[in-house]
Length: 84
Image (cartoon, rainbow, N blue to C red; front, side, top):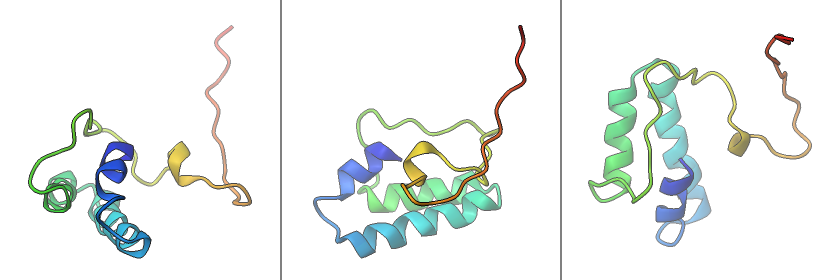
């Protein structure tokens, strides 16, 4: 999503960008990647920005990415078990 954000930040207001990303997150939370992809294409003039990569179908959309976390928020972090 960072590439999409970079693409739209010069043409949309911050509130519009927030609204757009929430529209994309709603179908992703339901595991409907095709609907989210359609929304991304609409906002990006029917093409993905250069360098944009869509996550694989096993991506957990209920988890946070680093871009979603801001200073002052609380987040539960699950670390992988140590394999040593």
